[in-house]
Length: 208
Image (cartoon, rainbow, N blue to C red):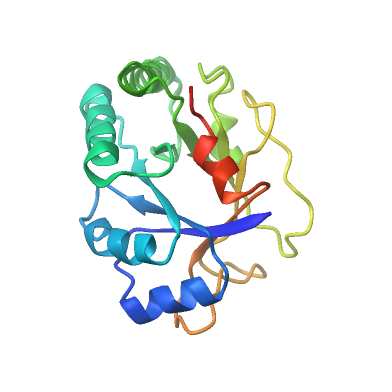
């Protein structure tokens, strides 16, 4: 079992020292909304932390093909260790007349990514979102679940259409009885994740 983080903000070198000291082995950086990943990549790489990208999807605003191509370009340009992730949590409420549109958008995104890389991108989402679209065309794609129990001891069950959970985001911002993710030395909540395997196993996830 290894742990990692995901973030959209820039972590200073002293913060990356804390990440390394805490034993985190991987990181995912937001690609679309900021360029902070450009500051984070050399810090992570210099500490032997494997990294990849995630794209927060806005299907009603952006082209699926263009966004998939942007992720692939970033992977190549920066030498990402991990396959990219498509972050599905928008729109929060899926109206019945939008389901077909979203289904098609996601299908196009994963198809374009697959053709360009011969890989299957990660799908990041939460059960509350996926239950609105149970017939998504995502067979074989690795699943990164967002689920925050008060005591994160038991590996979560998958949500349809997935058969297993590959990465578990078990902490984010503090919410009610659920504490936020913390790394000693960093003075704010951090998204924390678990992967059942080695860094080398994670690098192979979704490949081929």
